[in-house]
Length: 226
Ligand code: MN3
Image (cartoon, rainbow, N blue to C red; front, side, top):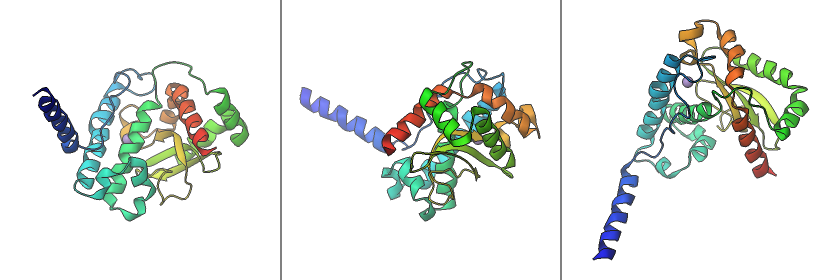
């Protein structure tokens, strides 16, 4: 009887997971108002609970009943050229936003690790030169999109920019790699506080970048590639 109860319980757990949507938003790792020195609470709330949630929900709808339900997000993105615009926009949107929330922090003065600092200096000359290059990529993106710091297949850092919800993991983009830092330059990310002044948003965002997380992602990525 006890075994039967246990197996019924396990079956119930498995079927709940089976029925539930494959992709989920992770909880925001800080309060909506925690980043106010750079991004206001209302923007964070709408961005996370409306825009972010919509990408996740729409991705789950777009893949429901297809073989993509059993694939990892990275596997879907790596062969995105084979998929519909709905899958491309929402798989990208889900991945990009889940990354974005983690690379921001209320904590002040986080710093890149020694390894990441060294790699940034090697690739861009200095930390300031890197920030300038990344800010320029973000500022020059016409319309909506993202700027990226990513690691290519040889383990080298590069800065790039993609339109809409594309990202460097997608087989359709020119510069491919694993993103370790992404800046959202859709107007929904900054318009309430900064209106048309994207450059002011970009100047302020460096103050809330979570270098501990970016360093962790960088080191995990290069250790896999070696
Ligand atoms: Mn966004």
